[in-house]
Length: 322
Image (cartoon, rainbow, N blue to C red; front, side, top):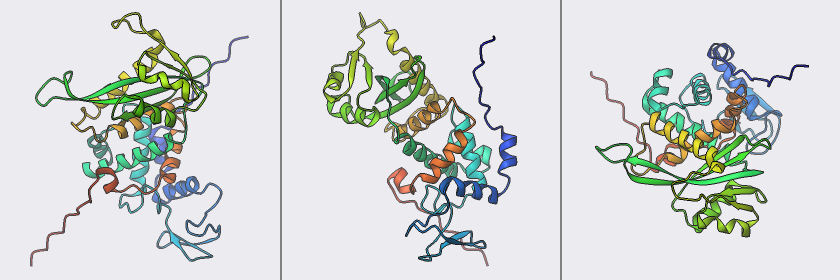
């Protein structure tokens, strides 16, 4: 008998997506189902009975009279952007493996670059929150890398600033890459690696690393540690080839899509979280949009000040001429 072919999951096409979410009502209904899959629950008192206020697009609790919209308390709270554009941004960001810059997303949605930048950072926050719910388990490889910002007026290959990143990759029983985590660290000493690894890798996992001495504490913290030491500095170990290849892809994405990093690398972690989110869900491209909508619905409020560290200043409207 012929061997069974591996099932391929077909992602939703752009035409199918636009037909499915053609109106604001379609998007609001889908977001409602993802936020409250078992029925509406009052954010204040937890009651499950409500009265819809259709004219204002609100839901009023039958017990405490609290009113809430479908986006209240989520990362989209307070937005003036239509849900159709939010959904299209989620679809494009989740399905494009190269990622989108704010300029590219602005051109596709027909909005300003600042608004596209704001939307993308909110989506990355939702992806980061969802990544943090899971830990790498089973067979795991760890490796450290450096992401750099190019010198002003110089070559991109010669970097003045290098940001240290810890990379973790888990594998299937067959030895194929499964889930990825990337974490920016202030240093590569034990005091920085230990808490990052405990947040990233489940206790009891089989962890392979290079010969960096900072990893020697893994055995004391409940991990099965295996060191892979190359015979010489110029030799590259085949045991860590997968993780190094994937990290190289992440570097290429940041250099190509985002045109490198600033000197402070302020948003590097957000870019890496987005890359990890897509990579870990690449085997089911047909569900990545729905999963991302669920992540957005579950993510708490994330404001402009949270992103930049400063208050957003709105321009005052100019008075009309008499």
